Amino acid sequence: MILIKLTDNNYQGEEFSLSGISDDERILVRKALDEINNVSVKELADRGLIIFPSQSAKSDLDDGKKTIFTVQHLTSDEPIIKTSNIMGFFSVGGVRFEIRSRFDSDDQQFFLHYMLQKVCNAAPTTNPTDAKRDKFYDFIVYLFPWYLKKAVAQGLFRAYIRRDYNDSNIRGAIDFPRHFRYNIPFNGKIAYRTREYSHDNSITQLVRHTIEFIAENHNLRGILAVDKEMRDAVQLIRGTTESYNRFSRESVIRQNLRTNLHPYYTEYEPLRKLCISILTHEKRSFGDDSKNELSGILFDGAALWEEFLNVVMKEHIPSEWNLEHPNNRTGSGKKYLFVDEDENKTGQIYPDFILKKSDNVSSIVDAKYKHKVDNSDYFQILAYMFRFNCDHGMLIYPYSKNETYSKNEREPKKELKLAEHKAVRLSVYGIEIPDYKNNEEIKVFDEFQKKMNSVLSETFSKILQ
Image (cartoon, rainbow, N blue to C red; front, side, top):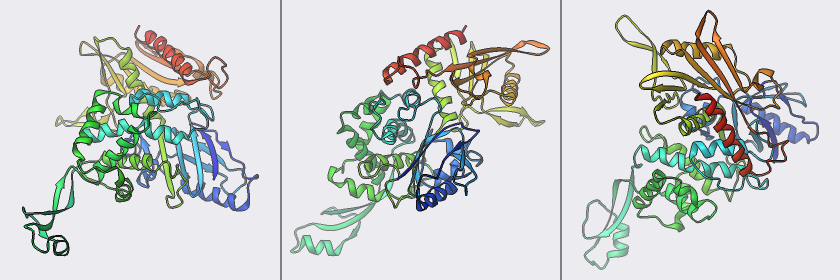
C-alpha cells in the first residue's frame, strides 16, 4: 500500500513526487488525492472517519470550510499538498495518509501522545518510542474512555430487540415451528417471541465485547480504570449486558457494521465506530480492508489544543480562581454580544476561556494552534474583552524554535498595550514544545513528558503572576 506522510499546518505546501512509482500507482494516488482534495471534515465524518474531539464535525466544522488538505497541480508528477490544522491516519482507495503534528517526528508522535493523555486522562497504552507499532491502534484505544464516558452520560442505549422464549408464561406471538420442534408431545411450555425495549442490545453488547477485549490485554487494561467515572461506566455496561457471550463477538460486530443514528443517543455513533475499529484491528489496520474505501481517525488540532489547555490550566490555577470554558463544539456556556430593543439576546460567541476571581472577569484567554498570531486574533479577543468589561486578554499558542514561518513565533512572551488606552493589555504566550527530533537528551517518551511538564509549570507560573 502506498504511504503519504505529511505534517499539519503546512500552508506553503509540500511537494509529493510521483516519479518513482508505476503508472498504475500514479493513477491510484491522483484518484485518492482528488477524492480528499478540498472535502470538508464534516463530510468525511459522515462517510465513516472518526473525528476527535467528537463534537468537532457537528459545530465549528459544519460550515464546510475546514478540510484536511488542498492539492495544487494534481495532474502533474509533483502535486503540492497544503495541510490545515488536521492531523491523523486514514486511507482512501488503497492509499494511506499520515498527517503528524509539526512538532513531532516521522516515527514518534510524542506531542500528540502527550496532549491525548491530558485530554483523555489516560496513561500510555503502549511505548510511543517503539517505531514498529501500529500508531493508528495506539490512538483509537486511547480514546475509548473519552467516548464511553460521553455516551454513558447520555444514558444507557436502549433499543427494541427480538427475544425467543420457551416457557409457560406466554406474553408474545407463538412461534409454531419452534413450538412443534421443542414441545411436542406437549410438556406444558409454549415457544413464543417478543419485541422488548431493552438496555441489553447489539450496541451495548458491542461496547461490552470491546471492554472485555481490552481487559484481556495486560498492556491496555489500565485504561478501564483511569478514573472513577470510567470504572463506573465499565461496571454499568457489564451489569447491563447479561446475555454477553465471548464466542458471539463476530456476530455482534456484523450486527453493528451499519451506521446507527439515534436522535437522542448521539454519542453512541462515534463510540460504535471506535469499538469496531478496536475489535477488527487484528484483521485489518486502517486502510487494509478493500471493502472500506475510507477509514481512519482525524484529530482537529485547534480543538485538541483548546481541550488540552483546559485541562492544563485547571491543574495550575489556584483554588480561588474560577475557569469558565464555553465550548462551541458542544454548545455549552454560550454568551451573547448584543441585546436588541426587546431585550432579546443575539450574536452568539464562545470565548475559549473566561478567568474569574471573586465573580469578576480578570482575563479572557484564547487558544491558538497556528504558526503565527495575527490581527484577526487580536480583533477577536479585543471584542471579547470589551464585551466582558475586562482590561486583560491572553493568547496562548504552541511554538518551536526550529519553525521557520516567522520570527515572531519564537518569542515566548509578548506584552502589548492598546494604543491610546494603555490600561488595556494583551499578553501573547508561546508554549515551547520540546524539540526531541534534534535533542539527544530526549530519546524516550518519559523524558519528553518530564520536559513538557517542566515547560508548562514555568509558563503558567509566569501567566498567573
